[in-house]
Image 1 (cartoon, rainbow, N blue to C red):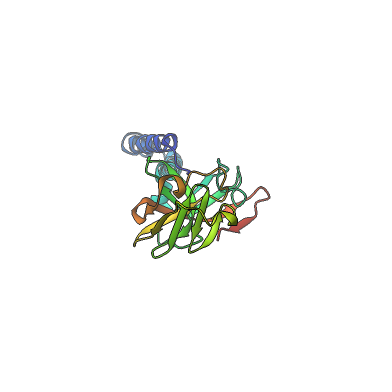
Image 2 (image 1 turned 90 degrees about the vertical axis):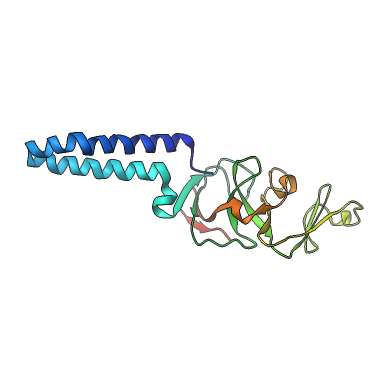
Length: 198
């Protein structure tokens, strides 16, 4: 999801460059000319803003964006859609698309389908939440080897919308509240329409 090490490095580099500029070059420029005083100040503001945005946009604004590059949430999220996510006061409830860190340390975005107190049953290709079939055929309800789990406080079961092509809780199990870092709120599609997720 979104933020990359490359963006982090570039943003950090811009912050260092702007700091050196402020400490060494700007005093010399402002001493020698009023023109350079205005230009130098403008350059500093632009470079600092750009650096902070690339360095850590969520820290600066509370929101971030990223471009979808996976088919795991198709058809709701398609390759190339821009997604806007919120990193503060976000909801973690059934139906929310959340960004989280999976057990391997990778950032993923999936939809919450079960929360505290929900009964989740899995068996081979079958998945039910509170007896609602999410994946599999209804004639598989007589599966003999169900793994049954009632979710505890701060546990969440997440699924990708493309159930045939998604790494989600069916593979790595429940996620915890502490693993979640954002809620994806909107998508911007090809014609620049903004659509609410949920």
